[in-house]
Length: 105
Image (spheres, rainbow, N blue to C red):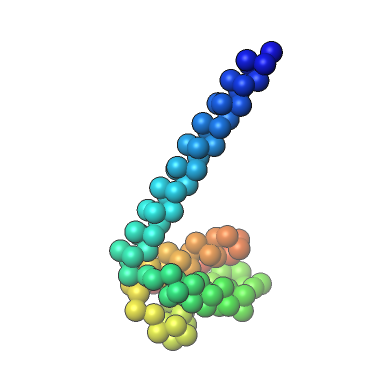
C-alpha cells in the first residue's frame, strides 16, 4: 500500500513539474512575441486599459465597429502599433466580454 501511494505521489510531482516547464516556456514565448510586435509591457498595459475603457463605454451596444474602435484607440493612445495588432487585441478583449465586433475595416 505504501509503495503505491509513493508511486502515485511521484507521478503527480512529475506531472506538476512538466506543467510548470510548459507554463514557463509559454510565458517566454509570449514575451518574445510581444517584443516582435514592438509592444513593451508598459505600452501593452496602457493599450489594454484603453481598450477596456472603450469596451466599457460601449456596453450594451449590439455590435461594435472595428473601424471606429481602432480610430478611437489611435486617438486615445497614439499607439505606434500596427493596425493588425490593435485589431487582434480589440477582438480578444471583446470576445472575453461576449461582445461582437463588425469587421468593417
